[in-house]
Image 1 (cartoon, one colour):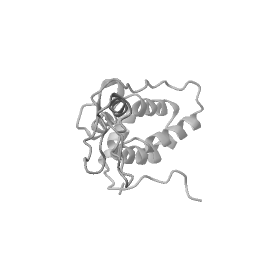
Image 2 (cartoon, one colour):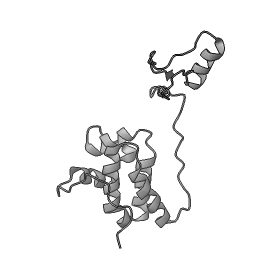
Image 3 (cartoon, rainbow, N blue to C red):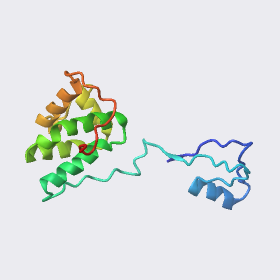
Length: 165
């Protein structure tokens, strides 16, 4: 289901008196614009409650070398789509990922890639919601301890991706 934003009548008029113009508006979300200043209304937004666009199912990578897996996880920890998890997971990965053994690395991989909603990870780590059994493990406990920030570290930005020489 698409929500089409309201158009400013003064700046852009929708020519909807023909079926072609109306179908163009509905199918592409791009109204016929007669504006001289180049104004284009924003494109339609996807309704988040709409389940017609499913999130692809995560497939675990088999036989991935440990160092490659850690590099991938470091990158994925930084690029979360929401700032809160980007800061929490990137600082956690910078601090703990290098020292993780293969079993812990696999648990961390599953933790950040299997849940379909990043808010779930955030709520579990901060203790707002109880952690489901399949994610309640030593890595989640490490993440919860990291979130408590008992050392009062400043975490306003993500750490550098590569160590400075």
